[in-house]
Image 1 (tube, helix red, strand yellow):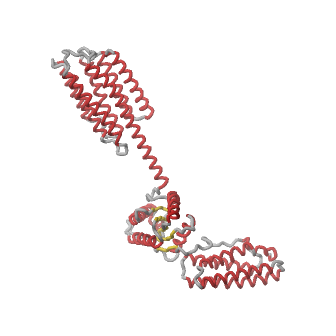
Image 2 (cartoon, helix red, strand yellow):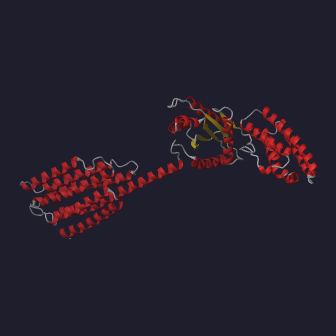
Image 3 (tube, one colour):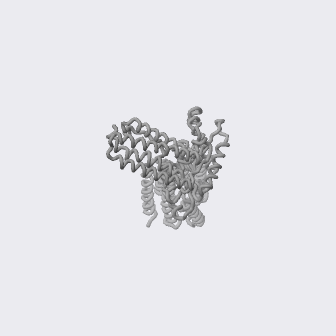
Length: 524
């Protein structure tokens, strides 16, 4: 194949690369790709101008064509520097290269010197421009795979090697006046490998561009994941991650029999900080507390923001006593910290250990129950939910309903008193009162129930209630069951919480809603 045909084929391939990169630049609206497309266009135009119109002594055409080729090589670095966000993508030294090349080229044409100096210096300047590209590759983000940096460097080094071989061929060329279109090994080698490396350059820049896009997408995905799993203010994990991680840890604890504990804590009187100091100070306190807690946690622990001023610590491989120690360390660290707003902050802690018979909701109720006790017994303390403790029958106040009104003033009055006494017992149980006081209140409730049953049976007899005998039997069964549970509790075989559940749940609530409502038509 003659040189003109070969150069034409190479030019067509170059135009195809120009269109490819230009389309991507237009589609992406990317300045770096636009510079690459301009560089490839400069290479194709400069090559055609040099091969077909610069064979003579026209100095201007020779300068323009050679500058376009040098611009093509410098443009590779320019485009990469632009994509990487360099402060000066086209540095002053690039202008110096162009000016130096113009001077050397003009002197070599106008002054009778050796014929091989222009192409020799052209290769030297191209090697310099390629070295600039290698230096840019070293500034690629560390998030990109190292293989991309190595591949780009390998292509650039192979291009430098190509020009070193070309320099050797130029020096050893025996032709007295070689021309670019001569059919010789030097021209064939130059054209073939120039086209080969143009394709490689296009591959390198497109691979780098795609890798940078993927790195940005991964970064954005990580950001979205952080937003979905992390509290934006404190940087702690959020409730969504708590549900996910706790389910995994409970499954692991159940399978291998390893302990798992939760610590829930709440900043005391935090609303006062927001009201008196402002929400900005409140936010700073939350961030500071999160930082303090993280410094006290162990590596396997997971710290979550539960909501508002509440936090939760999940401690795998930790039993109840170990979790209490961790909670106490955090409590002391918060209480002793000097906050920037010139005030102190304390926190109340509830601790619970997962039991095989409990689910996630049970564990949450237990730790929340312990926290409630801590806040209702003075705050700034750690309270644990023992492995043998029982939750009360209700976690909220028992509210009287108008539909429970029997129409008899005495019965309704006694029912309301029973509800009030049950609510007082609920508060007492949540405050972790001592056993003697709890037993005393339970006996007081039982005494009132016993008197209420007697009054109720008398009133129903006067009202002619036909099911009075059956209703009185229910009263007797409840009293006998109470006496049985009380005896067990006195021997230590039944916790006070079980007796509480019976009196409040079965006698006060269930009996009124299921049995007493049957005689309401006779008393209204």
